[in-house]
Image (cartoon, rainbow, N blue to C red; front, side, top):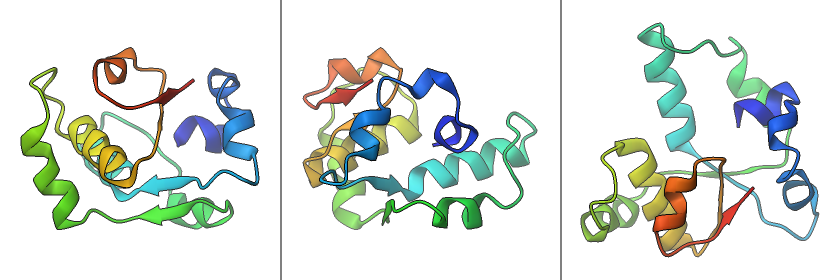
Length: 114
């Protein structure tokens, strides 16, 4: 999300899928939540107008539901990052792919776009 906003070249491989008008692009509240926590801890800098900037794009907001949270219990113990685990659960529930450079997502039964 942040690389997309910054126009960072690291997301170049995923750009065609994101920009494809036939693609439903979801933006998980988990991403914003992680940014908020890491910003408050001084571990990350994000634009102050992050939410307004996100509205500029036609991403579909994806809230965290009880189904998403409950699905986390069924995930294998591949890693312990709570943000990533919730993103995986959301992707599985929504039958969506994950856009990420992190190869840890390849260990789950879902598609990763990069």
